[in-house]
Image 1 (spheres, helix red, strand yellow):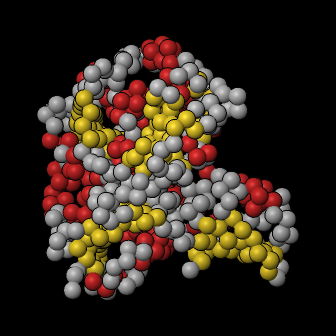
Image 2 (spheres, rainbow, N blue to C red):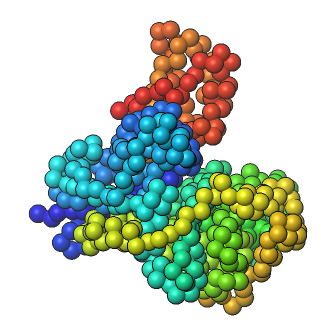
Image 3 (tube, one colour):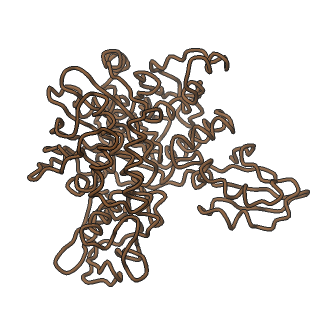
Length: 541
C-alpha cells in the first residue's frame, strides 16, 4: 500500500498543498485555496485578528482550512507519513499554536511588561493528530526553523531553493506576494533581508476582477498588431493564448481557446504596463470613455485597481532600494535579479522591469516558482532534514531591515505614492530622490536576459491538476438587540456577512476568508447602534 507525504505552503494570501507518493516521489494531487482563512488581506491584518480574537481562534481557522484541503486531495489520509510545512514566521507560529506576541510587539521592555518569554523557533517534529489534523494518525508534521523572528522559513526557502546565497556577485531576490520577502546578497558575505507589506494586489486580491493564480486566470497581456492578446492559465496552470481584444471597448478581435474567469496580479501588472505604454493609463486614471481598461470575457481593470497595484509595486521598489541604501549600494551595483513566487514566475519579466518591480540595473533576470512549496516538498519527502535547515539558519548571518521603522523606506514610499496615486510624473522621480539625498534611480537595462526555470508556480500540475477548494471556515456570533435592518450586510464590500433572526437579535455569520478584517470594519461602522463586534465571534464548525 502506498504511503504519502504532503507538502503544505501557508502563504499570506492562501494555502497550497500537494500529495506525493513517498516511494516514487510522484505528485498525485494538488489543492489550493483562493484566500487565507483568517480575516484580512495581509499579515498585519492577520496579526491584528489573532491579537484581538485570540491566537487559538486563528489557529483553528488555519487547521480547519488545512483539513479541508487535505480531504480534497483524494488520497487515503491514514497512509500519510509526513507533512512538510513552510511559510513566514507568523503563519507558522499560528499553525503551531505558539506565542505570537513577540512578533506583534517590538521592543524588549514591552515584551517584558507583557510577560513574554523568549521564543525558540528552532523547528519541531509534531504529531499530526496533536495539531488537530484529521485522518492521519501515523503522520508527523515537520516545522522548519526560523533564522530569527523577522526571518522565517519562507526566507530560508527563498535563499536555499534559488541558491542565491552562494552568489559571489551582488544579487537581489524577491518573493513577489502579499508580504514581499526580499534579500540582497552583497557578494562579500553580507546578506540584507527585508519584508515589504505590498498588500494583496500582487496575488490578484483587492483587484475587482482579481484572483490567485489558478485555472482560468489571465496571467499576461501583450500588445499585438490587431489588438491586445490575453494569456490565460489552463487546468495545469500553464499559460495559454486567450482572446485578442480591443482594450478601449472589450470587443473581441480574434477568439482564443481559453476562457477567462478573472485576472492575477501578474496580469494586472501586464495590463498596467501595456496601458501606460499605449498612453491609456496615466496613473491613477484610465483614459477610456467608461474609465475601464477592457480585457477578455468581461474582465477589466479600473482606476481602483491601478491604485492598488501601484501601491504594491511602489512598496516593493521602495523595499529593495532601502536594502541597497542600507548596504551602501545602489541600482547599478546589482546585475542579477531572482524573481520567485507565483507573481515572480508568471509575470513577464521585462514588463516587471519596466514598471519598477525589478531593480533597474539588473542585466540577468531569473524566474522561479513557489520556493516555499518546493522546500516543503523536500522536507515532506525526507530530502531535507531539520539538522540541515538548522545548520543553514545558524550559518545565515543576515541583517534584517525593518521597513516599518526605516526613514529611508518612508521617504522612498512617499515618492512611489506620489507617482502611483497622485499623478506625479515619473520624470520627477530623480528630483524627489535628490531632495532626500539619494542617487538617481537609473534606467532599466536593454538586452536583458531572462531565464524561466519553471513552467508553473506549483510543480507537476500537468499530472496533478490544481483543485481549488473553499476554505470552509466561518465565524459566527449573536448580535444582541439587532433590528435586522441589513445595512451592515449591504455595506460589506466582500459580501462576507449574513444575518439570521433569533430571539433578542440576530445571528451573524462571516465567511472568514472573504472578510477584509481590521483594515475594513465597514460593517461595524455601519451599525448606528454599535451592536456588531466581530472580535468576539466563534468558529462555526
